[in-house]
Length: 151
Image (cartoon, rainbow, N blue to C red; front, side):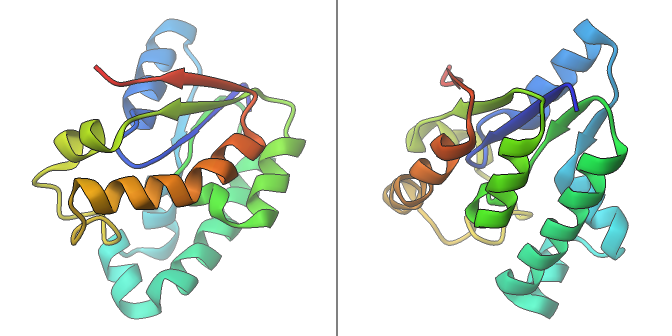
C-alpha cells in the first residue's frame, strides 16, 4: 500500500481515496466493497446471516489478502481497527495510516438516509458520539497522521 485511510463511518474515507486516486493515479481498494465481492453478499446481509463477529472475521481475512496483494490506496471500513490483529497489521504496513476524524454531528449529517450501515441504523447523534468515543483510542493507536474532515 501507498496510503491507508482509517476513520469512523462517514469520515470521508471513500471520498478521499477517490480524490487521491485522481491526484496520484494509484489504484483504490475500498475494503467494504472487497468484503462484498469476497462474500457475494451486501454488508447488511452479512450482518444478518453471520452477526458482527462473523462480519469482522471476513473483514480480517479480506484485509490480510488486500495488504499482501495490493499497491495503492486502501480505504478501510469504520470498524476495521477494532480488532487488535487488524491494528497490528495496519501498523506493520509501511504505508502511512491516515486517520480521518469526523464529529458525531457531521457523521449523522453524512450518513442520514443510508440503510447500508447496520451498526449506525439505530443511532442518533448521541449514540454516534458514544460509539466514536469508544473507538477513538483504537483509531489513534494505528494512525500516523490525523486529519479533521468536518466541513
